[in-house]
Length: 499
Ligand code: GLC
Image (cartoon, rainbow, N blue to C red):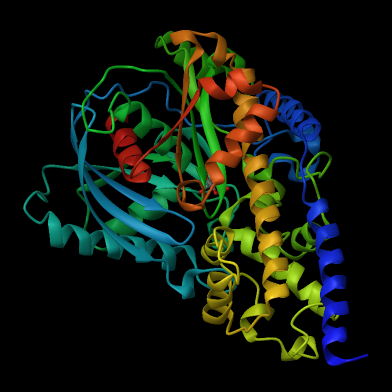
């Protein structure tokens, strides 16, 4: 066989194998419907179940985590005042001051820091190390921007947007249930994160900063949507257009929240439910923690790569849904497929053995979703952008046939993610009957997160799946997606305001 014939035969084998892999990533309308009804069932179980905060990790009897947030009203955009917000996300910490202007707008000052490696997974850092770091960043920010307002007799309220599952019994306290995403400091689990942060603030001399509210990032997204709602693109207030129903994040992790009737939150201790009803409250925002949807793997589409990833990163709270959807895992799925194709001698054949592959292709999480985003939209005939991306990010030269294979894989991985992302949205809309209520059933979904905001085509693929799923094209048409800008900061501030 000549050199050319050998390559042609290998390319044909690669194409065949890749088209099989691609079909294993496809999701059809039937699956969307099945997953949606299972999601609704799991929401209901989670609302009733008192010991459920592990999500489905201990068996599907527990249902979704459905964590009560103690946020019982929605802002309307007229709120005013200066508040601090601290936002601990998947990779960054942001400390901000937010001036709510009372006209749906706010002004924000903020400092963002990447969480240093010594605090990320696989280290022996302690809670004091982590919260000490947050307190020092807070102090540096205040010294820089707000030294004028820091007086011992004028306490400053701070809302803490904490993007991890916590068990809350009030707005200003919450114990960490488990770490998800990249952080893993074991001694924080089971402790009150508000207290840990407040203690460290006192140590750095910020006694006047009071952490008065703790909230999940999805709830921050929802609250800032409610506050800003009615703003048109040219910045004019246009009045209420449609009902804000959901706050969601599709970024490093994925999760969402919605307002639930207090009478339906069966797991609330009786004395709390009675107190709230006595205070005239009727609904409460629920943090679903949908990243752990179907941790028993009964309905989620599953390829052999998912099984490997689920096993390898089992520590990550299960989070089976998140592992198929969120930005932290899209590149990791592709990396696993490429390593597998290489082990079968079908791709990157210039490297004979696994050991010889470039370091970054062998190392988990080194293939980022930004690389996938560039490949997704590469429409040049030689896939030049794909070639450059692989050269730059992995130091890896590729042939045209390889690049075509890689692009097909990227596109099915992202489409599956976006299709799955539609499932919780349909489920909430159906469960709350929101599409049949006021304003002709028009609803708004507030979103934030790098994937939904920046990944090319993600939102339109998600909308396509909404139309294919149980709410159909009419439901999809009535669902408006609005980006909640600076959602963590504004949401944290709004939470501090209601505290
Ligand atoms: C993870 C966290 C969740 C958070 C989401 C988005 O799923 O468990 O609390 O809301 O990421 O950041």
